[in-house]
Every structure is written in C-alpha cells, then in structure tokens.
Picture 1: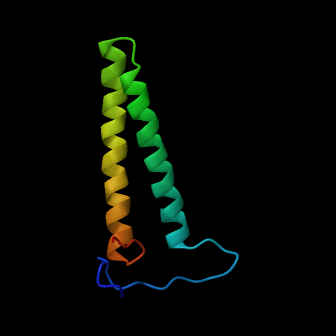
Picture 2: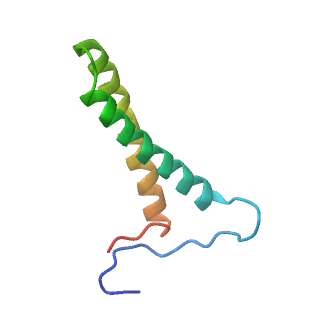
Amino acid sequence: MNNNQISNQKIEVSKGFMLNDKDYLNCLLSSLKEMAKNYTTAMTEASNDSLYNEFKNSFEKIILLQRKVYEVMFRKGWYTLE
C-alpha cells in the first residue's frame, strides 16, 4: 500500500461477467454524485423559494445517502483516498 493512501483491508469480490456488490455500489455512488451535481444546478436556478426548498430537501437526502454508500465502500476497502 502506498504511504499516501488511506484505506481499509480490501474485501475481495467475484470477478467475471456477473455484477458483484462492489459493482452495484460503485454504480450507485456514481449516480448519486451526478444527482447531487444536478440538484445543485437546479437550486441555483430555482424560480421561487418553494421550488428551491423542494430541491434543497431532495439534495440533502441524496448527499446523506451518498455518504452512507461511500462509508460502506470505504469500510470494505473498495474506495481509497490519497
């Protein structure tokens, strides 16, 4: 392991044509990141306070879920930081 990396011991997953838990979580995390970016844009372009607050509530739920998915991946050693 590189001395500049922060990670946990990696849990191995099956390889091949079938998707595994790491694949599913990686796809989910990527989708949540993209959704968070889109909600940020929507909030900045909201035409009124009511719409802004709806977008903000959804955004907050998405970033909490994003954090939970990241934490699971990090604990399993599937996400490392440098």
